[in-house]
Image (cartoon, rainbow, N blue to C red; front, side, top):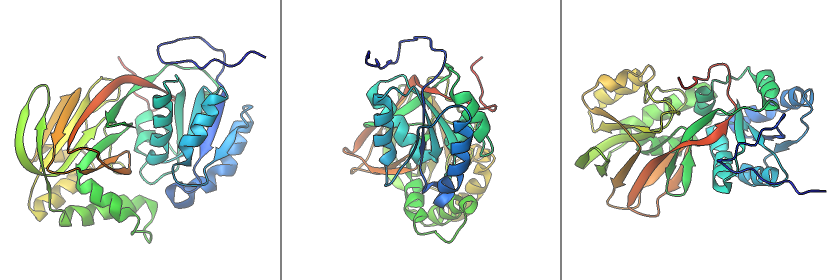
Length: 318
């Protein structure tokens, strides 16, 4: 029997159908992934998809994705949140395989699902579309060896991630906003010198720096209202130090994208940006916490790097 040859990015070999694998993170959304498992199995089984895998430990989705690609899967559907999707995307992108990524949102934030135009009620829609080939693609960001789908950042969002594990008494819909509220009031700021192809900024104290690929961040905040994942650039949001009252005003406004009108906020659209710190910083990437290997970090956009399975709300390029 002839071995299956992996298709790499840049090749456009047509296929009548996709070989689909579904990876479910039962722990996503504080157990929402597990609750969706039977419905997911039924929806995909009715389309002839029976490879439904479940994670058993943190970041297990990377291993499962690599195994699926090694046996010929051309579409991987993630049932989980932004962290699960980001880990699978990293497995795909580091392998250089032209494998399509889809998602059924089951996490706490679900910003990636919003970017793809997929809602929590779209299980049947995603299952039906998963077996049909498509060529929609999106940009991704890269920081060190980590790719990100939605955003990466420095500042109080790191404090938010550290607080999430402690806010177990809150429901999924409130936890991000609660942790953002407590984090933004207590965060002391981080000093950064910044360079991009169009500007050089002196060392400044920042409350938050978000390098946005998509428009939403932190469970739906419209942090970069005009960002799109199909323009080959990143939208960088720089929020300088501010009083507690101004911090609260900006946070409240960010749900609608109104924070961009504040004087402490600067936006720049760029293909790359370099950040200089006093020490190796912690940073957030699609809801995952990392410590940098260097005090100097370059973040860049990788255009049209990932093939994606989109929903009805996807905004196609014009």
